[in-house]
Amino acid sequence: MGSEKQVTIRARGQVTLPAPLRRTLGLNAGDRMVASGEDGRIVLDPVRNEPPAERRRLTPAQRAARAEVRKRTRPLSAAEVDAIRPVRLRGRPPTPEELRAAVVDGRE
Image 1 (spheres, rainbow, N blue to C red):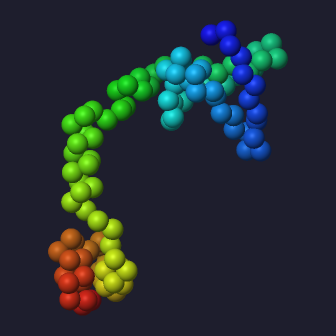
Image 2 (tube, rainbow, N blue to C red):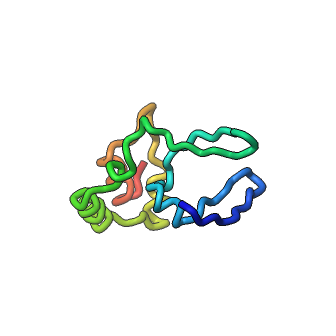
Image 3 (cartoon, rainbow, N blue to C red):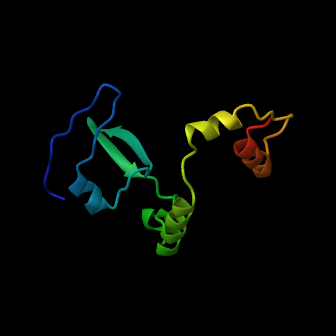
């Protein structure tokens, strides 16, 4: 690896590993590490029993499906949120039909 870069430990004990080092070692956000101290040095070893980061990434088909879902959905307006609030749960979550009816006609 050869090149060294100085890093800073922040108030909460966090350290950002330099991007070139992460790329070289194949480390990604969310990867788990085991931290230990050896001979006055900090040693970080990747947890090897987890699937490689490449398998956790979305496939092109998964990305396309997620994009399609996002196109078909939209955030609720303030009026829709206000209409849903009075729906009583009756000990269970409301069904999609109950939510739609509450939004459409504002009934409980």
